[in-house]
Length: 259
View 1: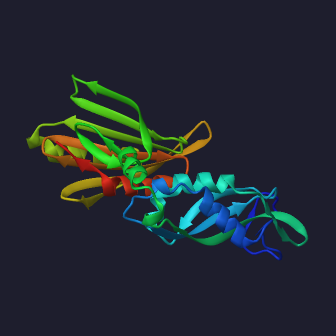
View 2: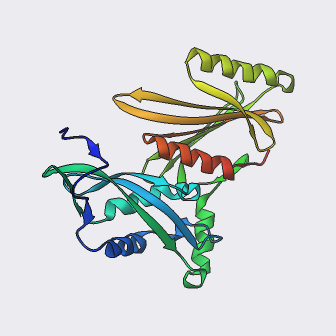
View 3: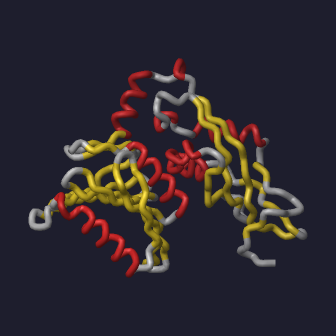
């Protein structure tokens, strides 16, 4: 048996040291309802994670509900706060194992302070003179290159699990196809998968690639589109492929240009 292998099928499954109902209640109690927009008073999803040999919980993934991916940062934080489980056993030996738990979080509007909800919405909305989007993150850098007519904005979530990069470049309107072709050519040279997509009312190029840096893998999801005389590039980066993918989907959904 491989000591580091994560098993799906075991003779004795991992279980909470308390009842499963106690685990679910503790998860609900720890979860911060202010990360949920007020239009939702309930979210349901399947939470898959690894129960380590010491009983700690790791490698959280969401199954079955894309809406829940917008709150993966909070879900991971809560999972790390949960008490250790009794680990799984296979052939009489303690092993790492996958476990999936269906979770429903309910936050009735009548039990929530409306002022706090309004505050949470404001704190989740990132806004500049050029764009806005929803994200529980903070600005870590912004710069303007007058020569190249490029504005760059960088954001990070509080736990540094996800980074966002938004670049706005002024271009000549007659050269729109030229700019997109340059992006395609550059992607081909780097052997990066990129495809043409429709994004809202724009023709866009969307790509995915990973970068290995100092033995850490970074997963990048990116999209380019032209709006008026601007070339916009949005990129989401994380060391977790799923977090990168679904925070990218959340950003695309809520992103709005002001120019």
